[in-house]
Amino acid sequence: MSPPAEDHSHKPAPKPTPETEHYWEGTKIGELRLQRCNACGQAYFYPRPSCPHCSSIDVSWERATGQARLHTYLISHRPAPGFADEVPYAIAVVELEEGPRMMTNIVGVEITPETLVLDMPLEVAFETRGEQCVPVFRPRSAS
Amino acid sequence: MSVRAKTAIVGASETTRIGVVPDMSALEMHAESARLAVADAGMKLSDIDGVAAAGLSPVAVAHYLGIDPTYVDATTVGGCSFLLHVRHAAAAITAGLCEVVLITHGESGRSRVGMPPRVADPSSPQGQFEAPYGTLGPPTMFPMGVLRYMKEFGLTHEQLASVAVAQRKWAANVPRAMFREPLSVEDVLASRLIAYPMHLLECCLVTDGGGALVVTSAERARSMPGPKPPVYVLGTGEASETPMVSMMEDFTTSKAFRLSSASAFAEARFGPSDVNHLMVYDAFAHLPIYGLEDLGFVGRGEAGAFIAEGHTSPGGRLPLNTNGGGLSYTHTGMYGMFLVQESVRQLRKEASAQVPNVEISLAQGVGGMFAAAGTLILGTAAAAGV
Image (cartoon, rainbow over all chains, first blue to last red; front, side, top):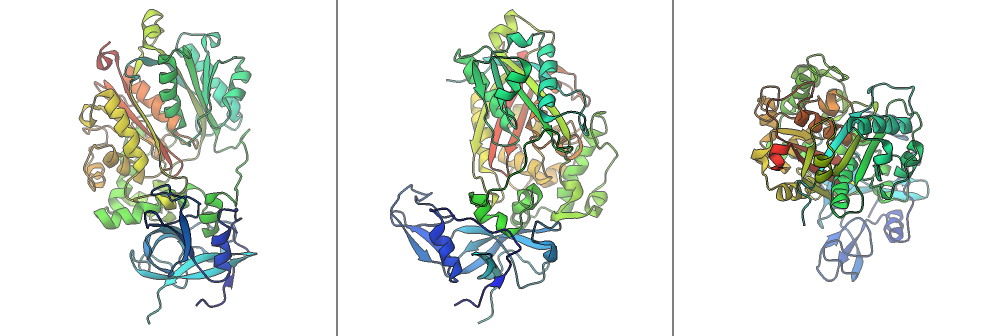
């Protein structure tokens, strides 16, 4: 599904824990993985072994569609380590088609208040960070 | 069981100097404000049997001062921690665990003297799910919901800027405030963008300073009165929502604000209309907007216009952040101590920008990026009915 991930190894990388390892194994092969509770049926993020909605530990992993909408964002004008070449850059929260929201960067579009419109459709892409891969989002391609 | 009017703040002081204080460590700022607050209460350090602190350990503060406490509270949930310390002290004193609790804050936020290093942990939830996206301190996280709020409620950039303008009007009358020159909406919008939609003048200061409080039982405050009128603890609340701003349930409202303030109002048996003076932690200009709505002072979507119309400015019907706030007065990093200090000054009628007839003051603190909250409703003896 996904094109080869772009290398952004100069940026911060996550360090998985045993509870999040399956999520980060997924991003390496171009999969955005979510957990869903078998008791209450709700999908949730971030990864953890119990459902934050009903506390059940009967949960399973699934592959998200990668379709999302831009829920809110800000545009940072000061570079975090590794982001010097990208100022100004968008730090955003997207709402996945399955319901959960997550922080991400918006890529593949000029970063201005005019081009980044709340609720615009987005799709997942991946950036390599050393041995890890992180999901980012770009405007959904017309298809 | 309620702690309503069971305890009082009988001593309060900030450090002698705030702002740029490169010749004092964070620990000494805890200690200097502690000595001043204990003296303000007409007490000696040997009267203290409980110590609470955040930023640095209460163990470190107690030992430095030569106190052997039998009640220790290291609750550290960000800038509102000191409001939680007051709440916990009120409960502990009411339960008989201790008699006199000293609560201290000191932070070399600007000069970084004697400060623990900032450590990023890439395996923490934030390290895995936020830091990879280039977060760089609170300006890149705290205002995450502002554009969503603007879309939902029509808040304008000018209204957001008016928060900084209103608070600068208060600061003009506060000699200790770092920034006192008049400010216009145009000035705010012309200042450089830090993290759109937030301009420099919509972000708090970064300063050095400290403050301390002495809390004891209302009974002791009456039987062994100090030089200053006691400020009674009438209502208290605390709450937490999320360690990651990206996980807020609704980006246009703080759940922690709502839960914490509801608890405080219920305990105090007061509502927003009873409050004469309000402090809302303003790390950024949108916080007073969220605070006014989440605490029930105005309806949803109304706070921006309410502030822009001058209702929270000098002469307005709801005096808000009368020291100038984190935007103009001072902001050490964990600013919550300064909310309580200003509430106490207003209730004692000794504030620089004194509001007439203050009987009930509410201080609303935030911790982290809408991570946690603490609320105190404080009042005079008349308000406490004692």
